[in-house]
Length: 247
Length: 231
Ligand SMILES: Nc1ncnc2c1ncn2[C@@H]1O[C@H](COP(=O)(O)OP(=O)(O)OP(=O)(O)O)[C@@H](O)[C@H]1O
Ligand SMILES: [Mg+2]
Image 1 (spheres, protein in one colour):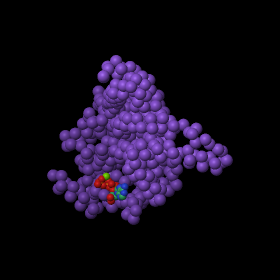
Image 2 (cartoon, chains in turn cyan, brown; image 1 turned 135 degrees about the vertical axis):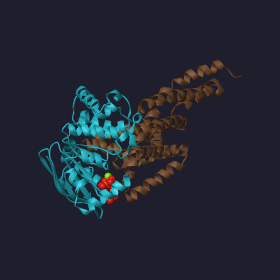
Image 3 (cartoon, helix red, strand yellow; image 1 turned 180 degrees about the horizontal axis):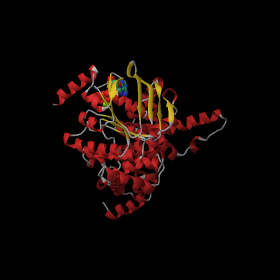
Image 4 (cartoon, chains in turn brown, cyan; image 1 turned 120 degrees about the vertical axis):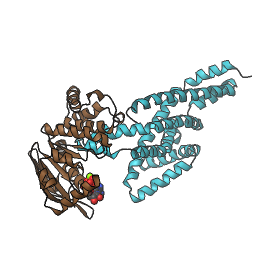
């Protein structure tokens, strides 16, 4: 369903992503883990072209896009098939919760206001926030804001949702509600690419885990293999460091 | 002797030119905003020589009193336009240049510098994260501009812009120098007719103050409405 081939990205002289290949099936949950600065965020940003790769291609929803020669129209087209949940939620601060979820449906998908409202209320109910429809983002907790941004992503019915460390900016006591929401989204059959440092959550939710190191895919496999039986030195080292740091 | 009835009569006379004064100020505000936006845009491109020229112009406009600029335009504009039209073999009678137009041109240029700074400040407050959110959802550049950037920049620029509006209204009192009748000029005329300058200027002060109070109230209301959702 989603297929990335030979993706390369550099910032100036430094190669940030080096020949990334990835195949994701419909309904799959793929989690990326790895040390800081390895290019996990950059990879997500390349998938919806917030960053333009130097080369490679991507197939999504039956269409193939060549990064090297992608047009403006193709860029919008590709972005409309994806949605992104950001670390900092990135809600529109001058719009209510409901407007945040509705806006893209009206502006981008040209839906009627009534249809967009119905869809938005349904998605807000799904993340348990229909009561907050008329609130403004700053009136919500970080966890609630992130759940709104998940509803906003769901509302455009993307082929895939990209989550970039969705709980990293949250106070510890708010992490649970957001993880629970993501779990429910995954359970509903949505295709998900997730970057996270929540290892036990990743182990629970993922169909596949990819360990990235210095711009490359170093190891990938089912969660048990990566977390429990990795025989890759860098993975073991990363996880050991990670567990000693967090326990 | 000071006569309160004369103040009242002057007040009524002066009120007659308020719409014209407000309209003039509004035209100048809009033109200077557009010119200011253009300056901001051109400056943001950072083209070497152009950037310096605009910089010098800005500093010149900032450092020259409005009166001087007004006279400068008043005397220079006819010459310049006569010369320019002369290139196309059109002759122009310098005295036919409308003094209202001169006022509009001068003040629009003057205040464009300030507007440019207001716009730059508002753009500076823009949140890149929200723009990326819009892009990631597939908003085109125009849609992002219309739905995300402009509404937020407007809110940021509103207080300063409205402040500029009040300043322009007051600065228009210089327009009498080139025979345009605004609130102040009208007060002079009314005062001269009745030999009661004090009453006329008391009335003028009240009119200015009244406009200021009403506008400030309206702007506060508007800003509060636009700022809903802002922490
Ligand atoms: N806009 C940019 N310009 C230049 N370099 C950048 C830019 N964005 C990221 N980088 C560099 O690219 C590399 C990969 O960054 P990226 O944010 O993708 O890493 P990450 O794996 O998400 O890290 P973290 O776990 O800290 O979020 C880093 O070395 C970073 O400094
Ligand atoms: Mg990152």
